[in-house]
Length: 506
Image (cartoon, rainbow, N blue to C red; front, top):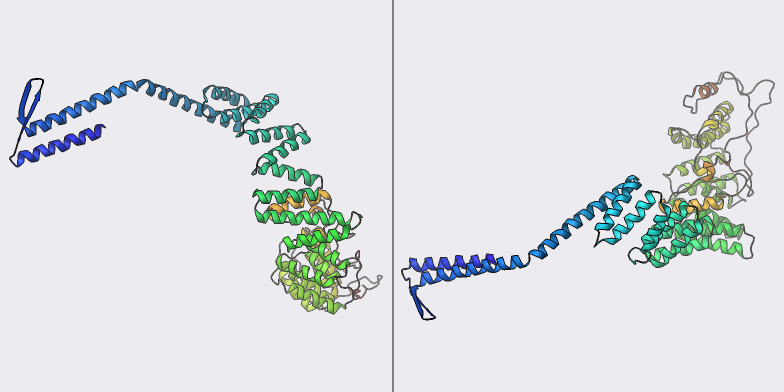
């Protein structure tokens, strides 16, 4: 308003100035209550402008005085709000630092000051009581939140955490179920329910939970697909060993669904291929394994692929394994598979060429040492093979190779193992290796050799000194690789083409 009045005054002054400049001052007369006032037009304009300015200033002063109480009230509210915000900030900072006493002091101060943000004060009261170790007060504060729609989910989560802290899992799950039923985006409640169902090996219940989370967009589609694939594999493994009527067909359906969701998920692929082979559908089983090898090679895949056919010669089997390796030629497992194929046919030169790139790995694993021992023994270098066997005893194991049970099936997991696999694979897409963690025995790749060494062999010296071992040229002057009173090592015999389900894999 003052700015508008000033603008009018300025315009009037400009008009007066222009009128005076052009030499036409004009005349103005005013008659009021018997009085008559004559003046120039310029003077009249200036008088009107001055009167308007004075009137505006007077009116604004009156309004300012009338609004003084409101301004004072707003100033007090702003000061109170600043103090409340400071109390909340200091209270939450004390909670984060674990200072329960300081947090409760600031919580009480915030409760006295807060008017427009009571939700934050309630949350601070509950968390400060929890930080101070007053479980009863924390539970009362969280319970009070249940009556407020905006705070109900926070209250249930707090009550769930308190129940878990005192070991009451039933009460914790009840709060999680109520929160999941009342909130479409309660991911924490979904995670708690999923872990509970996995712990109980309720694979079907977990599958339903994952589907509902996908519908609610709680979990990304990719993670949901991985989780469902792992759950279906766990369900298939349970059904396969349950002995219930029609359990095996259901297990096969679950395994195939798992492969459909994740074609590179090795446990699902191996299980589906085994069940298909039991039904005589070997060709489809081979197709599943080939598709899985293209995406994520795993030693269990080629072992299952090898055992699908038992009526072939070593040369035919080697060609089939080479064709599998060619589907993903750059992968480490494909190079190992080519080495296995070369050993099947006695192609010593091919085995040496396949193993040379693997010698660059540091440190060499027990599996690499075993393959080196097998290739050396196939070449007739028994002492070199013994040195590699000695080195394999102290070499680290390969995680993927640990998934193979020498007395059972691949991925012979317990329900606890499957539960861990579901969570890890669903989140990251990586497999867990519980057998490796428990240091359980795996399939051995070591060949059967006589235990004696020739004292002059350079391989024993290299193994004792810890120097890198590798294939060496034959020494024509080296004596026999066995002592005089010991029979010579047996000549390697070709492997039997028929392998039972529990036969030793090499």
